[in-house]
Image (cartoon, rainbow, N blue to C red; front, side):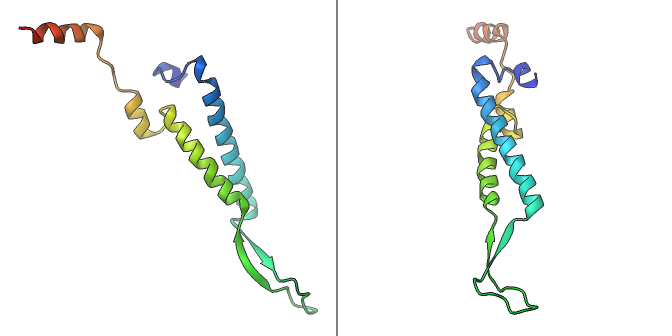
Length: 112
């Protein structure tokens, strides 16, 4: 409703809005996954651990969802800007347009 009120959205924008919702849904999904599983995971050596000892950690890798979250955020941020839903993009979209009467007055006054 707010997007419609400032003249940013129309029926033609349905697919773009769908992409925005899709990016947001994907972003939230990856946030929840990372909250639950962490941003990294351990890769262990192939050697069997001695009895009573843990296997040796070979390396720590970033969780695959971390990169997917970053990609979803880029798409989400771009679509938010397209709809004037960030502070900087909103200032560009919601600028008041002068009334036609004002334009006519300006034109007539400039002729004096």
